[in-house]
Image (cartoon, rainbow, N blue to C red; front, top):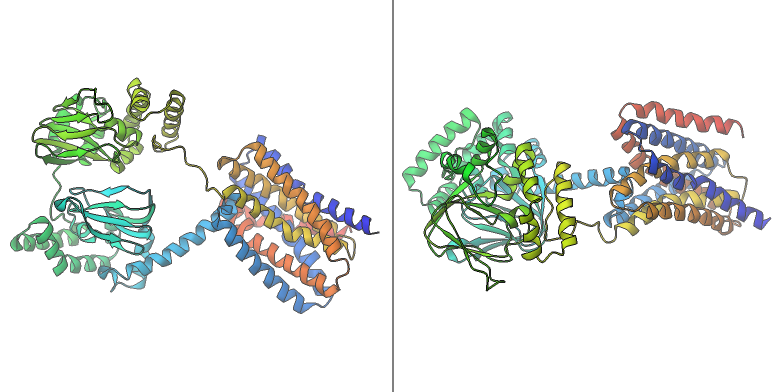
Length: 607
């Protein structure tokens, strides 16, 4: 009798979960569209819901174990939520689209609350209504930055207001040899005065460690001004504040009369156009760039652009002048600017190749272009040989232009495929030929897919180190309560065919959907199949173990276990299955959930 129950539980566990590797296999040759997958997931959710209500909740209710039902289901739900959170934080949220959506939603909600709290520290926002603070908090965009990133330099346009979610940023004083002005950390904001006066930055901001920033762009803020009189009033009050006047006087050298004139004009512009009038406009010399653009050497991507695209490039440039002897960049510095020489001479030195003669650049030459376009660190030193004037194009502006202009993207693709780029990577960045070819192919593939150029100085990003194990544990966690419940039930009475059917039906679309997402995360087909097959086997083993562990348990203990499993499974349905289905399929979810529910009712009627 013991062996019969043991092997019966093992077989029931295998049957209920064999649809997992089946779903994984199906994903190899069938990739259903969103609404089809949504139908399957919702159908499985409805089937599982019916099986839980009838075979678990119904059994406990029939026995009169109301306390066990309430306590066990709440405990099961809370335990699942707790363990699920731990697994997700280690990368397990990647195990399927539903857990990914749920995790990102929770993260977004948490960050939104944190953002509103952060805004209360900024004087400008303190007196705003709660609704206005909420609207503003939603406009901030996550901007993760690696260690050593220069967020802006002196003279750069102040196009964003930054807040720190995690990490550290140092503000440096370029007038004092880049001495430390202030070290900023979590919940700090910076360069609000430059942002609200539309003035160029007067400091340098560098990330000290890997940093998570939140950025409010000027365009987003001005769009908010269009729809909110409260924001217009608050902005008007702020630009008239003493802090703004002191900032413009100290950092930009404006006289009191100039500041008064700007405030008066800025208020008029704000009321009329809902725009912030720059107190200190950035010098660009767009017309002069357009005259020179088609003769630019060394980085021949502008010469064949339509005039409209060239004007877009010109609008994003900043114009600088420097004295002879000024060092523009050195080896190991991040290549976050493209330089276009207008007047004077710049000399390029090769510190790692002392026998290589320096190169003197003149008007119409670019420099730093190879490191810039490959997103590698500089390997040379650039020094102004004479007084020089040049334009600079920042990386973020370049990347935005690439996404907006198919013609520019085409020219950059041609440049990436040139022998000059391959020679640069091998001779200056010490890439092996195979790695060079791999990176160029990867960069071209990324651009063809409408994505940004990857950094040549690092490997392709890899998933979190713990993610594969966390994903597997997350998938297993979903199966554990089902398996133990099967074993416990079989130790006391025959297992319900409707429960096995409900689990089987629900597991198939879950595995189909999850396997697709796992492949997108870089998992091999072999690994995916092994993971699902192992879960199927462990489900069978746990079901068999459950039949032994609970063989001598009382009905009250069995009811408690069934209620715990019901609570966990119902939470899975509510948190992951149905939200995923609705996100993919919308209104199809209702009828498909009902159909799945009815299928189990029909199966139950034949027992």
